[in-house]
Length: 87
Image (cartoon, rainbow, N blue to C red; front, side):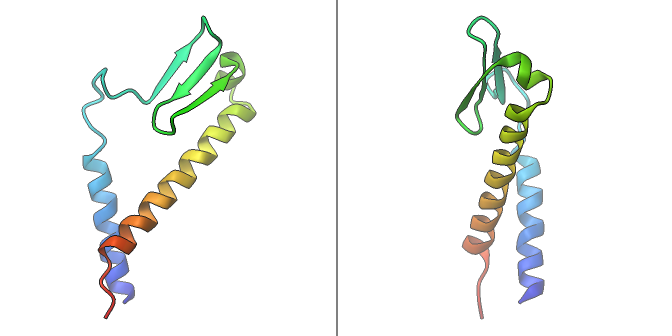
């Protein structure tokens, strides 16, 4: 059972690396809008006020990093559950 989970987890990691993409302009990760003083993270579909605070790495950045970590864990768990065949 553990071996199967490890195999699925490894496949998830390699699949995720392939999905990173070409970093083309259309594949936005984050937009910094100085005029309206907000940062938009397109992966989370989240808008955060105060660009300057975000760039200094204060609480707003910490919150985005935490939410990205949670999103990654949820994606990984879903992938494992969807691809793990229990005997």
